[in-house]
Image 1: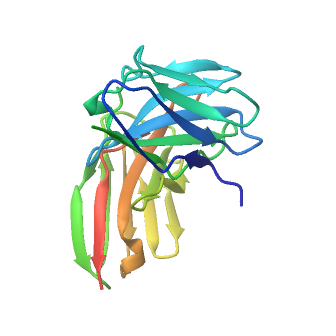
Image 2 (image 1 turned 180 degrees about the vertical axis):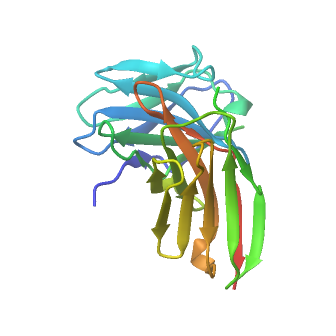
Length: 112
Length: 111
């Protein structure tokens, strides 16, 4: 069964460092998303991406965040200068329009 | 901003008991979804309800969409330890169908 895969599963980084979280969406999907879940809190939308551009972003997705689809298979989330409050689980999701969104297993980001 | 409030926030029950989880909002939705998230995993879609008053069953799970399409409930009959997880109601919004999740109900079923 096709699945969304994310790497790494756990990333520890020092405050101020840049991190790149990677996702491989399901191959025929065209809509891509990043979500964040701070420990003990709800899953929050960060950004949606379609046709090689950001289609919608939340207020959380400020200038320190960026997304890219560098090739035909990967979808990345970059956090330019990490802060302690960026520590969270980050989930990638993909879908075909009007169908179920499939979520990856997440990357746990710990900023120390 | 659509706010989906779930209750209870936490629920710990014995195996075999029944339970109901609620999802409430002041907004009207064209559809509502329920997800389950297990520790260390991403959310997995369980069901989508579309019509006011609709009831859908998935084995021991019964989902109902409120008549006014503002709320929903999830009832689990004879809970099993495998039902343990975080249950999230959610709605799709925007032209690119982002998922807006509820506050979540963390269920623990004790053997």
